[in-house]
Length: 312
Image (cartoon, rainbow, N blue to C red; front, side, top):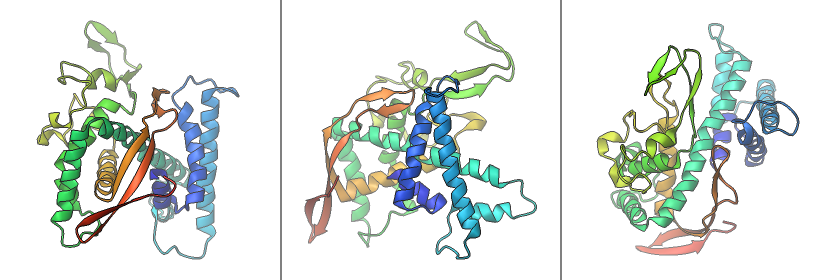
């Protein structure tokens, strides 16, 4: 669902095209953190092939958009990039633009979708958290004049408990298994020297699951977060990295999750029929998915009418 949305906003793709592109991204993601042995049959080779196929589809969109004489009714990201490429003072070439689109699509959906999936497990296992979430978002509807209006920026900023749930999910899920950094000078840590020029990996789990930093670290407890901590950079919360290399999509990811939760809480109910098995390859993966029965809510005369969503 999230990939289809991102592919439409960035490349103007329809659902069929987006799902085809998604297949190439899945192949890429399954092997992009693997031993760099570029031989047929290896995960790394498959990952490169997946990237190659995705890049070809993106280039085809560029080619089609350049040759099209008709202007789209609604501009998407690729339209802005094409305008920038034609600017004589820009440093952006088509090759740079294609690479940019490839990584933006990956960053905008991969970790966020895994976080949303993991969140379903937590909401099923912690009913009190689910109750508080529902209450927060139902209050938004009660305070609106138009019950069917889209969520506003002010309403999004007011969902304090939702932000706490998001942070706690990111802390426990540790979607990104490691952050790579190049050592710029010799660094001594606990008697060990990390030489200049080495590449090191910062392991989020060692920080997020440290009992010295979080009380009962394996417990899903959104209330542990204080309001002032929700949007601050912290050495004990590195879900989006830190320092000058902080993830530029951090706020976008949080907003996507919050908006998803708003409509889930106010328009739907669900039952988890299969909680699924979680593995790491090395990123978070759900081998057989999490199977969910989705029920839609319709409100008439202050009453809720619940119906089964077909095919879900």
